[in-house]
Amino acid sequence: MPRHSAAVYRRRRLLTLVAAILVVAVVGVAVWLLMARPWANAAEATPSPSASASDSPTPDPTASESTASESPSPESSAEETPGIVACEARDVEVAAVTDADTYDPGVLPQLSISLTNRGSTDCAIDVGSTTQRLTVSSGSDVWWTSTDCQENPSSMVATLTAGATVTSKVPVTWDRTRSSVETCADENRPRAPGGGASYHVAVEIGGFKGTTTKQILLY
Image 1 (cartoon, rainbow, N blue to C red):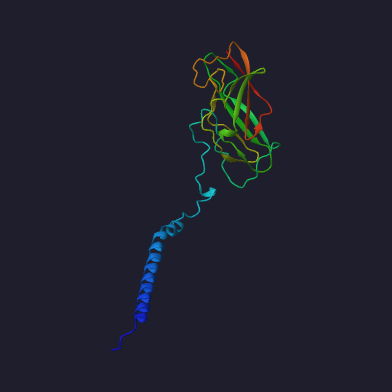
Image 2: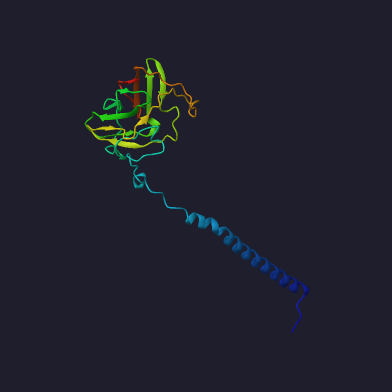
């Protein structure tokens, strides 16, 4: 068998080396693809779009919340219904409601909000505690405001039926003291004078203010 020249052997060794390099490169690419696969899995495992708002549990306006003592919720005749046109000021009548007109010494007034839809169609309004405000004043002197020490305010859009009137089911208690954001935990806040002193309760909700106030007398 004839011997090949040294150049032939060098070419064969070069071809063998190149082939080996190609094998290593192919294996390297395969390993990289396996390492990169978790990113693809992460994309495939992306959760499907969350349920729409209409699939979420509907808040029960009659349920008592942790902030119920600070801000009332309407009775069950107002229900959350997406897609209803927003209420307009000309159609909504807001009024303050109290459990009595006069209060003996030591008796705490219970304050509520009344909403009436004077329009001809149902409308939507945010009746959450973020939109509610009750104020007790004596003349120009503001004694107490429900939002001063309110905790965890929230929103709740509800439908106000045409011609219907709803009233807070859980009233807010006025402790007959002067409120401020700085004295929420103070047990020695100034007490409102009694002896037949007159006070007026003003309310607003959903961006609508009551056109009148409710007078109460403290003894």
